[in-house]
Image (cartoon, rainbow, N blue to C red):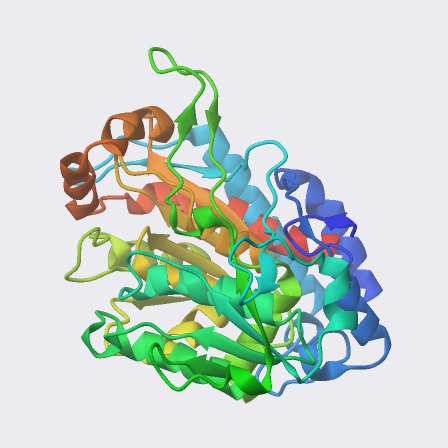
Length: 455
């Protein structure tokens, strides 16, 4: 399969007219270059698109809930918006940041960089259920030609903390991807015991319903065995799927190079899109982020929780003051009590998301292509996890960390100390409104240039 970049280049999105594309291209030099990431190509998506298949929400699909830029604003207005972002980017880079106020910390915002050769796809194993040695494991090119409705494929992915929905997703998302590879087989997903005691019961139950809506039955542990009527197969994801990805230094005394990869949770972007469509149904938006003005900016606060962003509302006020009607800002204090679909829609509708690191970012699996995400990390607590959700969905991931400090070096001490990690995660987030406002023009321009690159 061929390789594309993390923004889904080559998908054939075509919602800007030629004039707007030309105008955006003329401003593209002001945005920093978009780094390339590897992941599995979307030839199957492109093929369906060329055949007029609108079920995957690509070219030609219609949705009354979103309007293209050319319908909502004139070319002059779009030019003014880009010019304003350009002007604020120049002035911000020239003037820099003034000293932070008490109880504020300036954050440096930078684009996430994966280690060389990293892929946001993964390989999985498939073998007959009665072959515990896995000596009869099948090659991937045998899947489609070999399987029929007489074959039952059971996906098993283990995670030691499945009762909390971010970790449940580390098993559910890979299994969703794996089972999509067997369109003709009977598909099952292993349900865990003691689900009633799970911390995130509603989110997990809602996700299991999405599986069932897609024809994936839930295999209850200890339930009646129906395998006599099937040839049963076991599919498993890589063993590292539940491993947090801390920075790995090249040397312990004075590290100079870090490897930050992290496991991947989707095989390709088509799997992300199909999951979004089964969950969101008629609320699924067919167009990329940044395709309509005003831009929708979502600030997540985590109110009353660890890593609460103290200055989220003040940041929203300053954005409104600086950008006026160009941007609509929403501060989301918490998602506690919301259904999976309600949570997913908050992320799906946003063009730019700024949030502290935390469980709510599991919903980054539901963003649209070209969505820009700024994840704010606490001091001494940096790891690669939600970045892969963003890249798999063809979004753009930025990271915020305390200005003047190194997230990689700082985190080294906490890697092997539970107490240090617990302390770092429990602190309030004091990211200053000024530093977020300073970074915003770059995030906006990246969102718009991503649109232009996908033509």
